[in-house]
Image 1 (cartoon, rainbow, N blue to C red):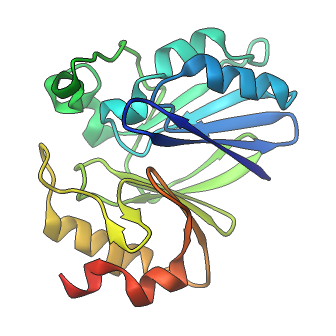
Image 2 (image 1 turned 45 degrees about the vertical axis):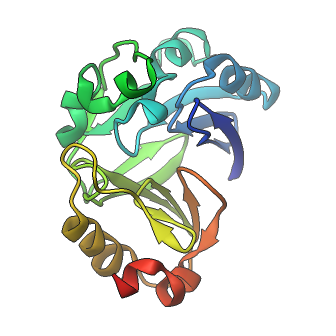
Length: 210
């Protein structure tokens, strides 16, 4: 498994292109779809899936265009995964695009997640962890010893909870009782900022003192 990180959207979102053999999945294409598609081509791979950690504009803004332009296997279009509780954000004010004068092109997720399931994408087994708090439908994706944490967990800190349907109590529960209780060490790839280690966050994250 190879992970390529690209910065997309006006909010400098971390978009991750995860390659396994000749296939990739993309986590949170916030924008700059051509840049993402060009990277997939340069890897000699095809797009098998798009995994969304939540539905704020800076994490979903490139989905529709990427589906149009990225190389995909003939007869096997890439599937889009999103938690069912964030579905209402895609084309509403709840995705926050209005705040910066942007809009999100409509798309329809292929798979609505509930959390707890394991999905197979790009030949990899991905476990879905429902981590509400930043949004009610926020999720993290666990793949081998990696976690794509979206805007739930950052190095030393955590996601905002003052947006529509955010909840600090839910976020703290998601981090402390779900992520920190995972067995073993993981590299955490957040939606913004630099990667971190779960053991480090278990000891130093600001959520522990809030």
